Length: 359
Length: 226
Image 1 (cartoon, chains in turn brown, blue):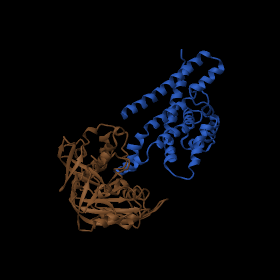
Image 2: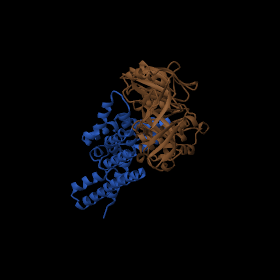
Image 3: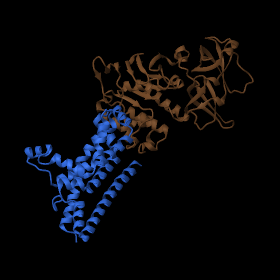
Image 4: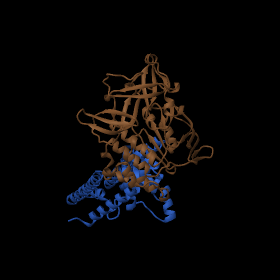
């Protein structure tokens, strides 16, 4: 992977000293850490909203900041898209005018993204004449995303794009972000305090704690490390993945969804066949079996290969693979009893009610 | 019937209040911006200084203006020598008095509007490619529009009512510097009841029109938001 954004800076604030030295590749990277760890400060330094004490920021060969060369580009000259945590849409402009704002400030020769395409991509057509104050949380995020993209940024900075968003919209926004990354090939930095989101969306994660870099690696590799454990991360781990709806069974009130070779029986919810839906499945809701279970009420049983076993607090984090990388949490005793080892095959057992559609 | 002197008093009142507001507005804006947006140490001093004309008897404010602008005053002598202009006892002086007395109120109105606005809105605009000036023009000003309108009308209304400072620095010359309140004072002293009633009515109409303008402008803004 090519380094796209080189960051080497430090910045003292009242609560911590931010010290970061790394290269973000193209694709989606993430900055993860507990609140107050310096995530937003780092993002603001890159965007030019906060001035680092010293160091260098280079984006695709262009120096944005260099304390040695006394370069500090103004935020408007950095050609970055920034989506703020609480959207911050301009209340005196309607949705379309909000989106056009950054388009107008961009010189014609630098425009790569056209507004009608954005409206199409983010399905904003019915909202264009509305006042931002009248939008729902998910709609605000979509508009803010379109507004940031309309200036044809060479990179997109996202500060907690899913926070305080209703669960049923998280999947939708995440799919939009993936589409943008794939279709428009705009690199992104995604700030989050949810490691499950990071795993689902990012290729690389920078883990920050008190301003210090704890790790910078692929999200799966970071998970089981001691450094990660030292953060005392308490939130339950989730598997976030997309399925394609293949069938609806009206008689027994279930919906079938497929991801690769794995076919899930999902709880019924309003959805059409062929639609793509994001699903949340808690790591602690997966049961592992060394043999294929029989006479069992759980509807979903599939085989998977164990990729890794890692201590995770007082439990063991098992990463398995079949069409997707699955995270499950079991106890130490269970690992011994089942004689689980890397490379061996297990059966994954999932109750239908544990599969939560995110829209 | 309404007399020429009374009509002239109305005109002088209107033009001095208007010019005073016009001159005070950009100064009030700059002071409000400094008070809300900067983190300088002596800010409280500026804050106190601005409030002085609000708290001090206007007659004393007028006295300070007289010292400053009088023929031997620092500003007055300079104007006299370079341009051969004398401001004292002209309607311009009345305008300066009105502007200075109205300034604290105007600053407060803008200050409130600026403080209510999320300062990150400007940063959003900058991140969207807007220069500092463009962001100020397209985001900050429209978002503070309500406060700015309030500031102008409040300043204008206060200027219309100005008496003490105007009397000191512009005098009470009928047809030249006599404003509505000054005319009112003169007629009351002379016991011309009919004239007093006419002047009171004129003042009431002016007040009503000012408030109506405010109402219409603010209402318009609200419907725009919908």
